[in-house]
Image (cartoon, rainbow, N blue to C red; front, top):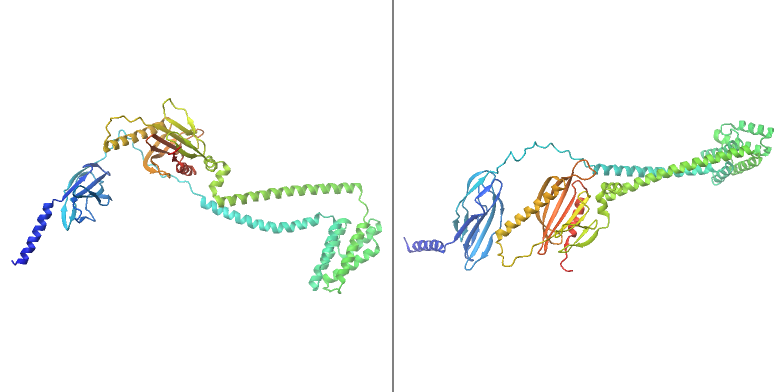
Length: 544
């Protein structure tokens, strides 16, 4: 063996001997060696070393048959002459029996250090079927269908149809109103107005002449039929002239022969234009219109004065028309009001949603609380500020009892209960309990509080009480214990018990404790919103 090889072996032996002499202390511990199925245990690896040492824990530790739930980062703590490197694991096992936790390897400056193995007893959870009743599996619950999307589609469809109907109605109604306005005029004024309207028309084509003379003769024929009581619209030109001459001979219509002659001229010209496709000379249309206007005026003057019976009949007829007109106006008014209401509801639903509009119209209890002006006030000791839909009123309690403020009772749509408790004064000279004792006392105190809550609910008739708990922090940064769940409560006016949500927030201060309880129906659409708003407003008053 040469000198170089000898020195290498001496160096390796010295390093290993030095590593062993330094006495790296690797300790392993668990919080319990006896656990139940599904219970979590904490596994701790801790090694004592210098700050210059390179410590490496296994990246993929092997704990089979246990499963790793959580793995904490390495915690380094400086002692007097060394450092403590700690690694924690949360483990779980779902089979009963006795299991060895395998040893773990830690690398120190490139050398491995092996921990001891631990024996863990995993026990079954005893189930007493005599004390605990067994129930059949519940059937599948029928969930109420959500009609929001369908309702929104129906609302959009109704609005589109109403808009289309409104446009069509506006067009035809305006046209009909113009026609009715013309019909409301007396026959003479209407005939003169229609003849004046023809004054602005200057036909140039044969078809235009035909339309012009058709309108022109229809005006005079309708007037003669309405005023002179002659069936002029269905009569030919010759038949109409014969009827006029007969009325003149009998003295019922004192028309000048020149008037009848002018009417005959215009009617014959109109027949030639309509049936023989004749085209009159320039200026004839204006002249014929003036002739027929004169016929209308002279016929009006030639008509005999109406008798008292005719006047009465006309007045009754006028009143009947006025009554029908008012009735029709009322019908249109109600129809317009209905359309306006439907449009308003549709726009409101699109803007605010179906349920808010429905609940506002039907007076949903909690939407009134949600929309009303809330009250912000201070209560109790230690003083807190909180916003509520209604002011909390002080509740009388036994002398020396807790200070209590409530809004209504459990039958209210949303119940709020604020309780202030005082802590007993600290006894001087009494030993401060250890951390473990404090934790045990805290758990016992929470369990007593839960029992008090359950007893209070049961005393009021509540059943099927389910309870959970978790630690939270309010919006204003105050830590609290949240105890929440559901229960069935017999509300007044309802045949069956109502499923309700309840939440109790427990605040612990040096001066005392505060319990804030909220209760509302589980199916209430606005309960969560009110709960969040109340809790977000909760604030401790530090300075008065």
